[in-house]
Amino acid sequence: MDGAGSLTRSLLRSLRPQADLKAAAIGAVVLLREWVQDKHAEARAAAKDKAKAKAVVEREPPPRVVALVERYLPRRVGLSMTVLLLIGSCGFGIVKGGHLQDFITAVSDARNALANSAGFRITSVVINGRKQLTQDEILAIGGVSGRSSLLFLDADAVRDKLKANPWIADATVLKLYPGQLMIELTERKAFALWQEAGRLSVIADDGAVLEPYVSRRFLTLPLVVGTGAETQARDFLALLARYPQGHSITKAAIFVGERRWNLRLKDGLDIRLPEQDVGNALAMLSKLDKEDRLFSRDIVAVDMRLPDRLVVQLSEDAAKAREEQFKDKKKKKAGDSA
Image 1 (cartoon, rainbow, N blue to C red):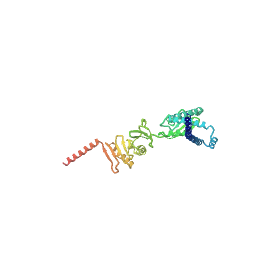
Image 2 (cartoon, rainbow, N blue to C red):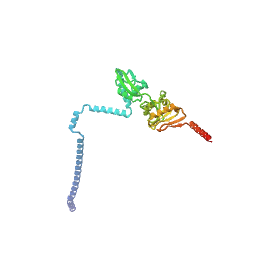
Image 3 (tube, one colour):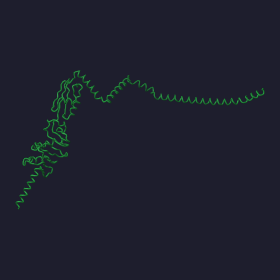
Image 4 (cartoon, helix red, strand yellow):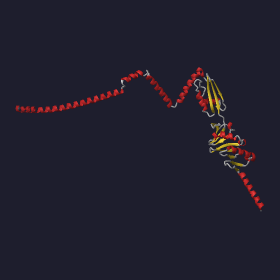
């Protein structure tokens, strides 16, 4: 027993240093790995802290800039910016919602109401030079209403609105405080009726379209027809008026190809005038009517476009009668020769 136990103890003593050495080596490896991991973690944490510190430094303005802003920036600027932001938001909402004109009207009405209550209400209106337009029409065109006050009335704006109307050639607007408005007008005159593309309009002598033809009071005006006739009518009708014989029986003057005129007489006779020497052609027409009663003959057209001749187109009845007349003459000649 003792021999066996001694042998066992001697064997254990001989094996223990080897086991202890192995365990120590394993422990050292574990400790080294944990130390390396700890160093890596510390390095990552330091890098994160450094990045955060750099970002904070970049975001924060330098102390000198802060001092300059605090020194020169007006007080209560934050409140002012807030008020401006609210006003801008309200303005954007008004414009975006299509209520801008309503808002302007409401502000103008409120302003005029204050001025009227202070004694600047328009109490009398004097309009001189009015012939075609009524007083209410003139005030409506100028934008003057019962709510308008003389204090805030823009005389230049009223004048521009009045001159934009085709009937008004010129206007003068005077404000006589405390409550009188005076308007001087120069109206255009209705000169002729102009027909183009089936539309009939009343025009002035400068060709300005005054209004569509709807009133019978313009029925006696001369009629001109065709593109460009409205601007050329004044000179041509003045020339035609020199020859009363043709002027009095003319129903319409037709501008052809924007180059020359035709006359349509009241009995339907067409007279085709030349492009040049129109005055001489009209003088010849008057002479032929005086001497040969040209306008009373059974004809449908007179063509004066050729410089060396005048071509007359007979009506169907006149042409047949003339043909029969020639036949009778031929028969008589044949009988006489037999």
